[in-house]
Length: 62
Image (cartoon, rainbow, N blue to C red; front, side, top):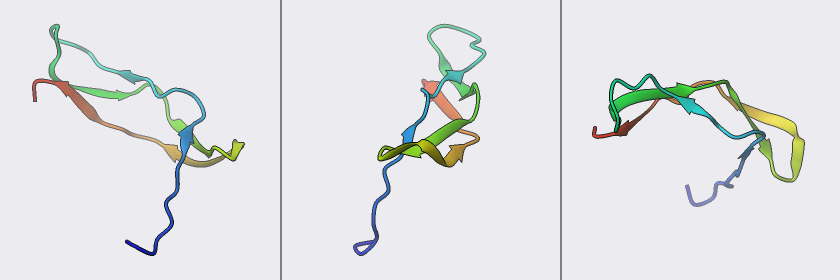
């Protein structure tokens, strides 16, 4: 949208993904968050404005 304002958020702590790999290298296994990720406005790093509860992702040959 041309008139909308963009919001940039940063994770308070690094996002960590885990997966149970059946083989190496990975061949499309699903990764999941180790724990929810709190997101903050960089101008106010002590105030959580959003939380990422899930982030399903696949890596490797899809």
